[in-house]
Image (cartoon, rainbow, N blue to C red; front, side):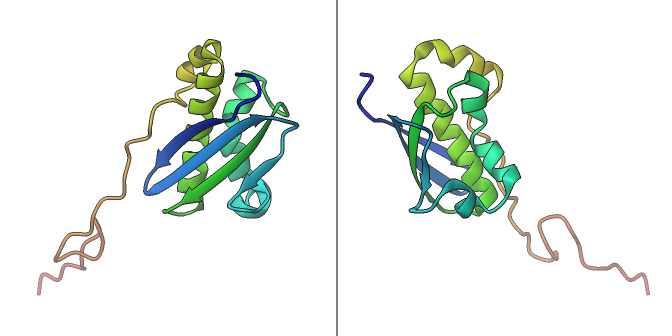
Length: 130
């Protein structure tokens, strides 16, 4: 089990991340690029790698991700979800700290749809009394 790759899928908003976790030295590849080169912001990178920090497993795995759909923020959340799932399947003892941190639960929040007769989902056109 120690040498095989672990596969997990994570989702957030309209983004999906398919992640493979293999023993290695901490190399990240997301859609053919390095992690920071793909996500472009340090905050998104730290959000995506949060499960490794909580479980103290940083630098022990090579991670390959195929992310699609949504934007960068949603994809970072999807990578985080997939990574937490992969770590919990790699070692069931890691499930409890990940569950307490809320990383195994898919975030159900989605974008509210735009309604007719309005500018956006909740913003309305300016009201004129006269």
